View 1 (cartoon, rainbow, N blue to C red):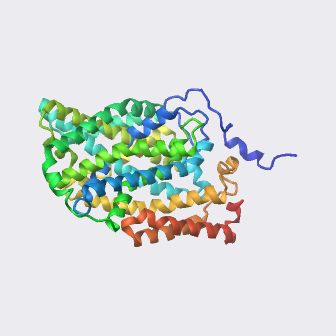
View 2: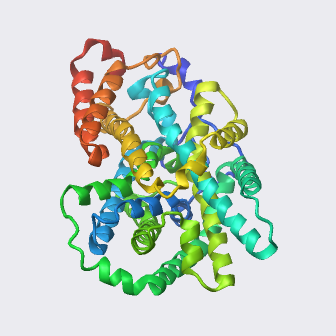
Length: 458
C-alpha cells in the first residue's frame, strides 16, 4: 500500500536520526531543511555558548538592580537565572536536536505556516535591537583605543566599520560562528577575570561598605532580578533549536542542561556583578567609561577595550544574527547570506546611541521585561505542543508541506499567546514567569476541545 504522506516527504530532505554525519558543511550553507551535517561536538558546543553569552545587556541589568539588592542577593539572582536558562534551553531545544529543524519550522506545528510569522517577529525584533546596541558598545571601545593610541576619534566611522565587519563574519554561517566562538572563548575568560579583579581592586573598600551591609530584598525585587538576568536569554530560549540542530547526537538531556547552564553562568556572573558593583560605586552605567576609570594601566586598558569589542562580535553573530536571519529566510524565501546582510543593515536603524545614556539601564530593564512578556507565552506553547500534544514525535513531511494540515494559522496558539501576554504584563516585574502557565494551559485546552484546531491535532 502507498504511504499517504509520501508526496509530502520530498520537501523534507532525507534524515537519519541518531547518527552523526561527517560531511563538512560549506561556508554560509545554511537552510531551513532538516540538518544532517552536525558540526559541533560537546566541547565545541559548550565553547560556542560560552563565547556567545558575553552580553553587555547583562552589565546593564546588573546596573539596574543597584539599590534593591545586596551583593549576595545579586549573585544568587544571577545563578538562579542561569539555572532556569539551562533547563529551558534543554527542554525547548529537544525538537531541534532530535530532528535537525530550526525554530521557524518547529513552530509550524503549533502556529501554522502563516502563524509562525508572529513568533518569528517577536523573536527577531529584540535580536536586531541588541545587535545595534552591542555594535555601538563595541565601536565605542575601538574608538577609545584609536583615540588613545593614534589620536583618531570618530565613533561614527568605527560604528559603521564594526557593523560591516560583523556582517561579513555572519555571512560565513555556522562554520564561521563555530571557530569564532571556540577560538575566542579563552581570551574572553581571561579578560573577564581580569576585569572583575580590576573592579574589585579599584572600588573594593566602597563596595564592601555599601553592598554587603545593605539589607536588600528577598521578595519580588529579588525574583524580578532573576527574571531580568534570564530575560537577556529568553530570546535564545525561544530559538534554541537553531543551535541545537548543529550539535552532534549522543548527549542526554541532563548533560545538555549542564552544558547550557555552565557555559552561560561564568560570563553572566562576571558581567552582571561588574555592572552591579561599578554602578553602585560610580553611578555610571556606560561600560566603556567604567573600565576607562577602573584601569589605570594603559596597555591593560587597551586590552580590556579590545576584549569588549571582540565580545560584542562573538555575541552578536550567535545570538542576534541567526534568529532574524532564519525569520527572513522563512518569510521571504531568501538565501542565508542575503538575509544576514539585511539584518546587519536593520541594526543601523535601532539608534543604539540612545541606549547608552546615563538613564539607559532603567530603560533596558523595561525593554527586557516587555519583550519577555511576549516571548514567555510562545516558549510555553512550543513546550506544550512538543511534549504533550505531539508526545515528542513530529511529522517532518507535514512540517515542510505548505498545503498540508499546518497551512494557515492555528488560532489556538494566537489566543494562548495573547492570554500569556496579558498575564505577563499584569505582573511585569516577573513577566516571563507569569506568562508560562496561563499560556500553556490555554493552548492545551483549546487544542483538546476546540473544533477549529482538529487539523493541527492530527
